[in-house]
Image (cartoon, rainbow, N blue to C red; front, side):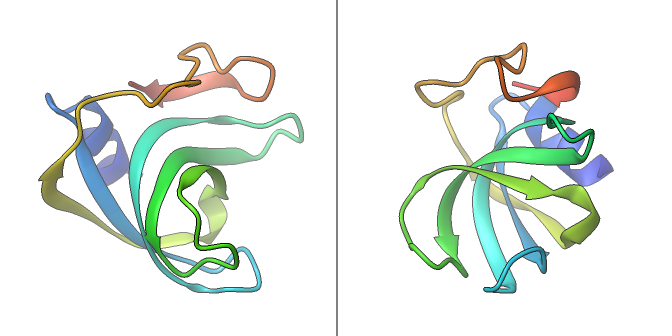
Length: 102
């Protein structure tokens, strides 16, 4: 989790790659990490903008990843400009108890 914190806190923030096993398409994903916080079921999650990798839909957009299924995190050299439209630093109605965010 420390790697994700570093990627989010960097100026500018960095893309990350990780292996995810929390759905029917396990595999590596590359994302723009935006926030680590708790969802309504009290599960610690990464909220990130999906760019590429294993995915049923293959479409870019905000995705929620349960941290218990995230492994092999790598902070990439590539950066991104900041929050995507719709990002809510306080977690909005979906997340609470934000641990780290843009």
